[in-house]
Length: 89
Image 1: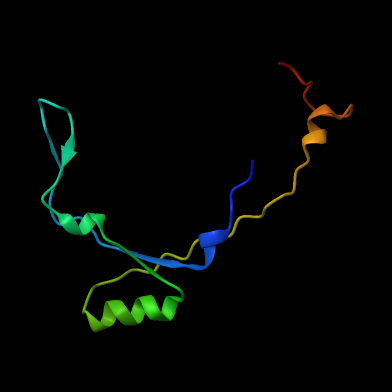
Image 2 (image 1 turned 180 degrees about the horizontal axis):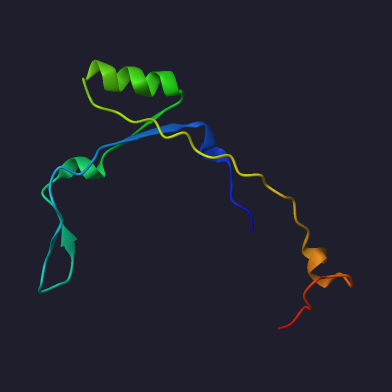
């Protein structure tokens, strides 16, 4: 199974946490009073995301995603006779 590349071209703006998370001792849930942690804004270009942050006077940091090289794989390669490791159940 290989990862998809559908949302690779979108830029995501998220907010830093403003309050600590608290643990509910009865249920064990983690909660916070900070509702901005739930907000994710998506932009089609980096320039749109930066312009939005600057218009709202938000401090921002741009993290450029690393490109990973996708190597095509075949299911039949699992049963090749010249595998480095033997195929086992």
